[in-house]
Amino acid sequence: MTKKLIIILILLISNLINAQIKQNGNTLEIWTLFSPGNFVNQNAEQIVEKKWPFKIKGIAGDTFPENLIDSLETHNNRIWNYLDANGYSNSKKKFETDLQTEIKRIKKAVDISNSDKRVIAILDKLRKKGLQNYTELNKLCDVKYEFLLYSFNMNVLDKEQTFELKYIADLEKEKIKIID
Image (tube, rainbow, N blue to C red):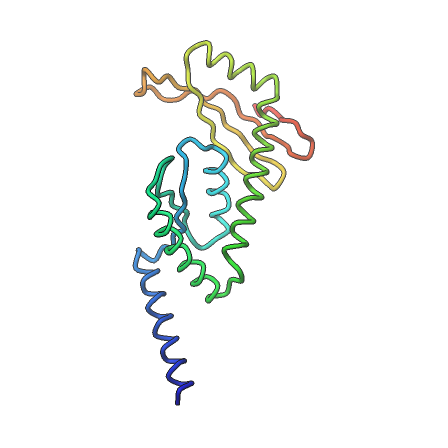
């Protein structure tokens, strides 16, 4: 009798947790603390997110109250428990490993890009003209990333950004290839 009661209680709690998780429009969210303008981490999160059944939502900037960390961890732990109970194994650790691996790859791609004389020349040209740059990143495979470099004028924000350069950073060859 006690075993049955415990099983029923576990099922009820599990259903309650699942209902709380799914009430946000049937979208699971992992909450992260983010730094605005952190190109590497933002892109790593977007790439890794595609492999998982949740969205990553940045909920704080450079400064945040300490109790926010507790709320974030409580929320995320419910998601990790839900995933582990529904076919995933050690989901939090796997996600963190995926994210760190992607961060390392993107950092290497950025380093390769920033050491290329053609990229340096374009960035210098933009800086001398007083223009800002904006870069889009696409992962082609584990060793190749496509960069789309744009420029824009902060003083004329209603004008569209200007395409400057498209190239692929190859992590194995440690060089970039300009795409016309």
